[in-house]
Length: 477
Ligand code: GLN
Image (cartoon, rainbow, N blue to C red; front, side, top):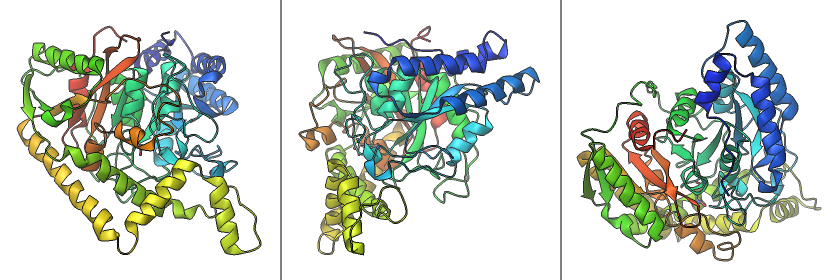
């Protein structure tokens, strides 16, 4: 039942560096894995020809001793809400079916700059709305550990591609958990950086005050390598921060001796026993490694999911107003302008997108704006204050990533609220804008991967990665 993982980015980099393999060979291996696992639905679009041309160019650079760094020649995949010039950009939606984007996202350009080979675009819940990748208009993705289970979402396709060796690593986006939750369900590392650490230019917006791009990787070292390549200020994203990017590898191996880890009391709620056991085991291990474990309180936790879904839907309803049939994608024909908007949007959007547009429009409408949107904004401040208070006393928080392991396809699609409640442990760090990482921590009785989450203070990615690296079982890859 275990997927066949390919090499890590770091291992592949070493093999390329000492001539044991070539980028063309590594890219062919990924393409072959992608072809062998099409039933898992990882990719919405594979660019085999383009990828092999990039790989050939990378091999030529290496022959001339002009390799550009750790990602040069390494095959990567991108979630299909990130712009890659000349490739389709569907966001998993019928509305954008056939749309080819003319420009690169800033993160895409950064990967190209580093010499990475871009394999193609991975599946997602439509516009990033979901936690299972079942909401993709082109069919669901499946968990490589058990094909009747979801891979998580919304960056599920990226997680599947990495877990089954069809890409060495992938980029996804995280609004309320979309990197961390699929990482937990597929046995990978998923890192959501601090809000503002990575440019959102060329990332299709779901909720602009929450969205952040990050890596899905086999291990912590790879997460550091990919983050290093994509982090930094971008004048084309006014929310990106003009802060220096530290060297994320410099202190990666320095351990956790003397660090204080906080365990939020309120996160003990309804938990699958296997997840609870994994968290207890993780705490034991960190204690053995010399960290101190203390209990902390995040008193407004009970409001986090409700707060997130009011703000996320409100922002999404505004962001998705641009899909009117005039500028992008598929147009629904009708004799009047209003009829054309209606035809485009009612045919183009799936049920979850419509639900969220309605919810968000309601929360922003006159008469309800104060009751819902403004209240949620105030609650967001209280939640951010909870985290700030807790993190003034400890260095990091340790929590479960998800209440359960991967659920069955179809199990939650009939009950959107049940799906939303699965985000309980990830939305807090999103609302507070903090960096958070899901680290694989064993498996349950069915052999399904479990993730534990580490959360750090703003801009503390180096500390987060270092703590994750210490906890990672050595020799796991
Ligand atoms: N599962 C959450 C939602 O459905 C988070 C999605 C995301 O992070 N893109 O909104």
